Image (cartoon, rainbow, N blue to C red):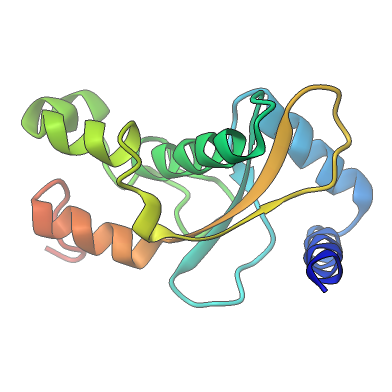
Length: 155
């Protein structure tokens, strides 16, 4: 049953991206340390992104991919998603204003409540693993607003 779900998720990801070649290109960009857009999300308020990790341990690799996606959403943005620009426009200023908060959020795995799902994509690379990470960006943005790291939308 578990394998069937995984294969089904991979097929959905391939179909959503258009073709296996498109998914392979996304995966190659993710291996270079970039976070790329995944298929359109099924749930409103979430964003799907593809990231990779050179880690051989699957658990550590999944956590590293999650951290890369959250960091990209916060400080870079992920073109092709509903968060194409950084949620926090100036990383250095934000870290200076709340040094412990962002360190705990990213390096301390405080991002875990905002990660809805993480799925390993079929291996087509020599080193590392590639992951499809679903993040609840609305909850993440609300937490940043409550912390004062970003202004509320529209103000």
